[in-house]
Length: 288
Ligand SMILES: NC(=O)c1ccc[n+]([C@@H]2O[C@H](COP(=O)([O-])OP(=O)(O)OC[C@H]3O[C@@H](n4cnc5c(N)ncnc54)[C@H](OP(=O)(O)O)[C@@H]3O)[C@@H](O)[C@H]2O)c1
Image (cartoon, rainbow, N blue to C red; front, top):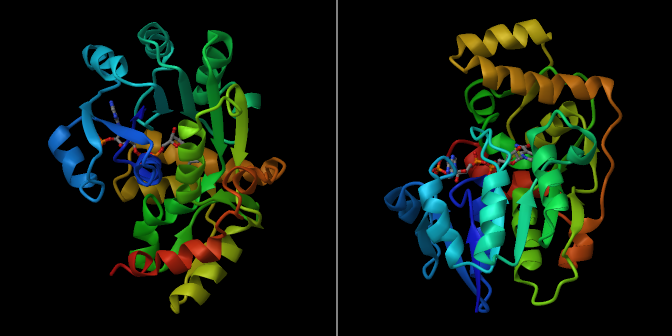
């Protein structure tokens, strides 16, 4: 039985990795959580998953968590700034055989992204790794973008007509589970960019939301300054608003990221498209 430690196990991606691994009889899922009681509530749908105390900010939790695992799913929570050099060294010492790191599409060419440094540490580190580089999460619509959708029936982002490449986090979970559980080494020292097949503007996403939800969803692209002031007035932190700005404004001036076929190559089926995401999450997107 392969023992796999999943960090960020209660978040968007981690939950999907746990869900996909939990379906496999050959795997013991160790869910790394900061708060075991909250973790038990979040992961209640997956009996058999073992909760393991794990806090990136508390090195004392790392040794015990790493001592009992064969492979590690490593995710960088948005609030964590560490590049994970110490953690990767500890994993190597503990005999962890494989680290699968959740990076970001394009991180290999962007040294300003914190994920870039972690990728470099893994590549130089000499232990088997796999880099997953996902595109823009469709599930941003059920998290960071949800309030605008629910309360104002709109997408409010300074993205103009830029086309975005998307991914459903369920597909990240499915790919990660296959890569982590594989008994042979074909995914070792590989990097996979994970995308759906359609590039969409936010106007096209608004149109698909309108059709799928049966409720008009508008797209408004404010100036960066108006976006900043609006979001600050809504109470979002300065750092978070600046990241939202970078994520949505800069793509107006850069080439649209490439599409990848990695999801279908690894899972044997096509990736979910935005219309699938809307249909499958209709109730949540309608606030029910
Ligand atoms: N959003 C996008 O479009 C996008 C696209 C590509 C890549 N990404 C990357 O995806 C990652 C975020 O993934 P996500 O959306 O799944 O994140 P998320 O939903 O915010 O979940 C973060 C997880 O990390 C845990 N966590 C937070 N601080 C921790 C700590 N100090 N120690 C241990 N666990 C901690 C949280 O647990 P608690 O329950 O304890 O809070 C939660 O399980 C980022 O690296 C981001 O750059 C995002």
